[in-house]
Image (cartoon, helix red, strand yellow):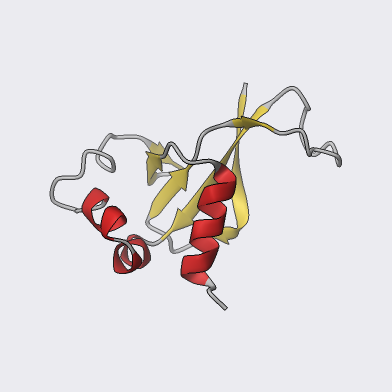
Length: 102
């Protein structure tokens, strides 16, 4: 079972795209916040404009007119969802750098 969770720090209520990385087995679940045998997939609700401003790769991927990555019909809580091949920790590091570089 894949447990889909929101990242507390990088979930913006006015975000207009949800990014998630590859699901992973969480061996650091020391507080038993969820069953240990679950696989976790972390979701980040961010802003297309911020991604496009800082990254040509995201700009191309999120091109509103023709992006297959965004217009797949998949969503998370009604917001377009893009599943990436990166790990949740890599996405977290990238997004924290974009939103809070200092």
